[in-house]
Length: 129
Image (tube, rainbow, N blue to C red; front, side):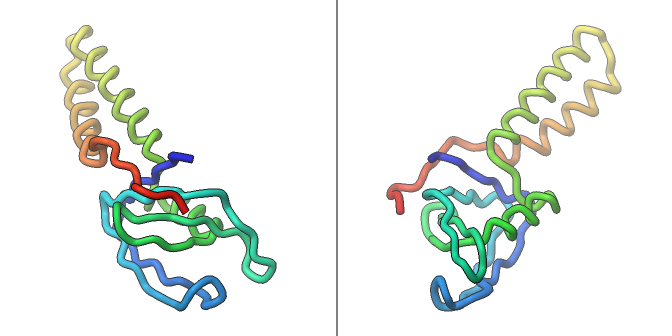
């Protein structure tokens, strides 16, 4: 599984329980990459959790409910969605140029610029859990 999640806004993640590991707090920063390292696992008390790796260093587990809540709040986004958004805005820029529509050109250029800050060369974790 090579799923990558991009952090759109910085947040602090507190491991809620010591049943998986000792409690810790992680600072997750804007533009960090969270790599999904394997399949989700089920804990009868706390539910589903998934192994993640931040950039190329910190490994931790996060409950799927927490991950879903971050997604709903637009704090994280799958990398493929960012690539699709950039592709869409590039298409709209080309379309605006063809139609000589300065307003749409500026609008989509600014949106492409915003999304492009989250795009970089793919860099996957070295090991799998």
